[in-house]
Length: 244
Figure (cartoon, rainbow, N blue to C red):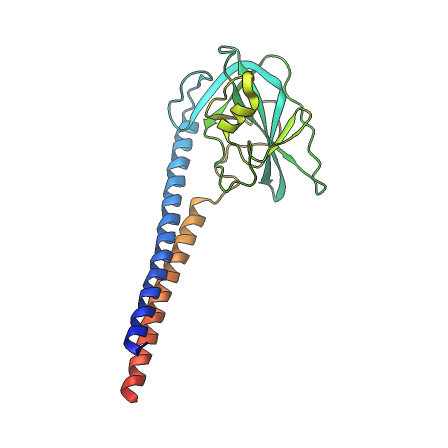
């Protein structure tokens, strides 16, 4: 291969690599924008929480809702690999049956419990009887990379189900005749005297917008580095040719 053809080959490789890095940067930037929008929407809801009925249609991606009903005794959903205050544990979800619509089902986020190094599943006490719940309605946690199969690599132990992600359609299949789950979950108001440690912080177990911006800058920096390196190597190669 001639030096000219070799140079063209390496420039094509460098530009493809730089383009891939730049694309990753733009993707990280778009994720930052998505999360900024989500945070702004939640802030607007929290600034003026106008409670809607649990069984009513959602007014948007986020809304404040309340209603009366009962928790089913089973299943209790334990979402694995959830961090809080530097510790690993599970997020606890109960299946709630609204009093106004007994045929409906809603997953309610009751809070976080630690899981020890022996991977002993925590014991969960669900609220008993008819209770009033309120909180932030939102989409379930993002699935991300699926590990395993079948309702989120579902494991069952008595009334508890341990999952690595929440897929509501797969949960419907597991629940069968118990009813179809609403496509949003209720993040229980931390002020209510039930459940476990919790807050309404969005993206608690994922990257904040600022981190996405930082990664975007890093990817763009790598793209620029590749191009600059190619330019320097090309300049040196031509300098050697002239000198030779």
